[in-house]
Image 1: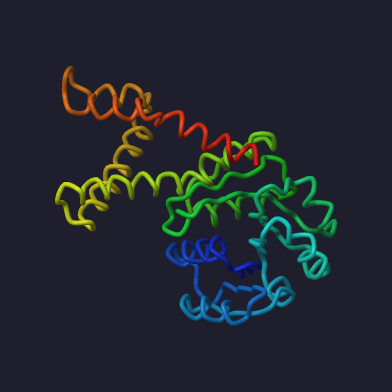
Image 2: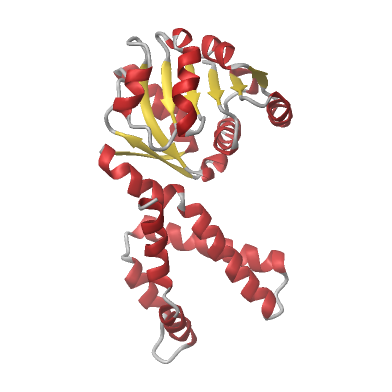
Length: 257
């Protein structure tokens, strides 16, 4: 099974890295992008074959469209014939299945999916529109292959934007929190690499605790806050500075762009 990735920017490379780390052979991946110099350098680092859009589509069983949303129509016009009878996975945020279907040949089977960058280490989230044209065997193949990159979540089209603001944009927000905790550690004498590692392990463990137990985040917070203790003082300072309001406002800003 050959996989073609058309558009080899941050997300295309993150998906390639994740697939390679989960058993896909470098020889089974083709990558295409507009800038040939950047493409070759990126492909060389992964050991995969750089090519052009048409060849990637022609030679692949599954074609991943990882171009920017405003580029997708022009890209598909150039490779429409090559996509006949192909399985197409679009990761262009903001392009719903109904719009994608109109740009593809009738025989192409497609699904729209929004991954986040942790797919690079197999710990991502892939938010997919539950309306698609995959056959039963295509869907099984999709879950087998892309399930290696993280958890696949199927949602209605009207929920995709907000879900992407949480899971797709969220890694940037989480990274800012991780960086801020690291800076605070450095302020009080902890080595930066140690502070970052402590903060990262804390975030990973807290997330795992919630996922495995189903505990409400408020209950998890309360379990750490002893009366008159240091943690509740920190929580109080976060509230005073509008921590939760700032997070919600960040999602508002994404949704109201």
